[in-house]
Length: 260
Image (tube, rainbow, N blue to C red; front, side):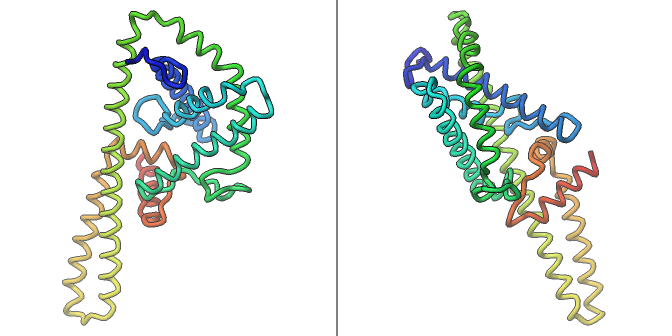
């Protein structure tokens, strides 16, 4: 199966390209975050040292742009279009799936719904040209040098690894969304009771205050449900926001900063 051709390439080669570029993308993100924030941050969507969006982006460039790789103007234009399209779709899917915005270019000029912007699209276009013209020939030689006897072990080993990591990450995101939703519900209930308290007689106020205290304790207990993997995701995407849960998300981000 892994020796079969896909878009004119052996499947195992495309998969190894994906792994290498995902790792290089993760390294790029980590270096950028370290330069910007002065400390190490695991910037990957997954738990391991891989950013799949870079892997998929590189595969699209390699497959689609291969016929025009020697035409520099066309290569640059289509590099911008393809990387921008991938970034836009990725941002859209994450927003719809988890009700959160993972990055936001709204403050940049010529942006489209904050998911992509012209300045970064041009940067990605230039980087893509470097990948296609300079980096990929080296990586192609590296993959070609792999002993054929090792290929099935590496191929299936990495497939199992990525499946497990993706499953753990997806589970963590679902749990995080559940915690944020519950925090939001408790917060709204506390606010509603405070509003009700203004109109209640003093003999009822004491009972209401007891209920408020119980809700506040529940609210704080929910924060304790945040595990390492939830905190890692929030730290990896510090610009994450949500139209529905933005106040709760910002409070979590502030507590993480205070705690860590």
